[in-house]
Amino acid sequence: MKRRTFFKFGLTTTALALLKSNGIFGKPIPKEEPKADLIKRSNIVISTWSHGIKANDEAWKVLSDGGKSIDAVEAGVRITEADITNRSVGIGGRPDREGHVTLDACIMDENSKCGAVACLEGIKHPVSVARAVMDKTPHVMLVGEGARDFAIEQGFEKCKTPIKEVKKDWKEWKKENKELLRKPRINHENHDTIGMLALDEFGNISGSCTTSGWAYKMHGRVGDSPIIGAGLFIDNEIGGACATGMGEAIIRIAGSHTVVELMRQGKSPQDACRLAVERIISKHDDLTGLQCGFIALDVYGRVGSYSVYSGFNYAFQKEDGKNVMVDSEYNRSW
Ligand code: GLY
Image (cartoon, rainbow, N blue to C red):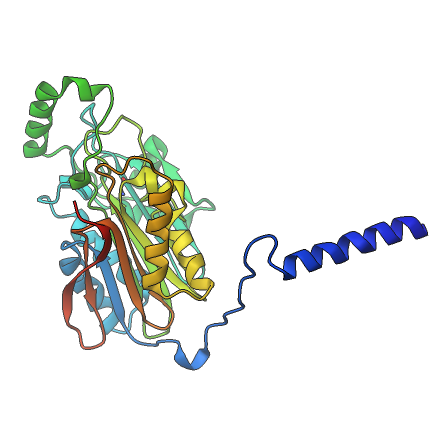
């Protein structure tokens, strides 16, 4: 290397290192290694909204039998997916504006293995199809017809959607909302995704997320729920997070990944959820009807949650086996 080139290269490298160490490229990230003696090795499960109570009960059976968190989060949300009275998750879910019930789900384990399906029609358990994508294919996400063909090939149970009552509601909605057939309106009532996080006795965290999405959405619309990093993210060295609410806003900030990265920087699950919600708020001039919420669980067994508006809650089951609803902190009232 010529002296001048060496000098230039050397200076540039030194300058870069100096800039980095002074945080010119953003605040330096403190190296927060999980403290091994504080890492929890006990069962915890949390999931969004009140449908989480029954889902937690099922997940708890797996955990208290000495099972793994990945099996618990799959078993847990299957309960919600199979509940035909639920209008925002699974086979009882509301359709898009064309009358198709399109389901989205994902799952992620402690080894950062993950699987997802989006826009899946007529299959009872999208979360289990997502698990099969993770376990049996080299891919992370399958969508639409491809996801359905895969599910059928794998022997997953088919079902007819929308169910009768939901179809009737949709027909009435169409009559009354001609203008919304062109542009769907935000409706926070219809975003009650179930997202679940579980910690098992081996100290491993996994998560799942499943929804029928925004009621009367445009055909082909996919929200945050099946998107790893948006609806769900797990890093077993740090913790996990999942989201509920208006998927478009959550995707814009890679919501669940943001929460986990904030925890990596030393924030508590509670502060990480709050900061992610504040980031969503800062990116939107109009927050009308824009409800989003996060729940988070870290390797120390700490939990947190935060939402844009009041009214969000989550089901929390821990060592003593008690399964209770917890009201989330929030930024503003409706
Ligand atoms: N969070 C669910 C959705 O927006 O589809």
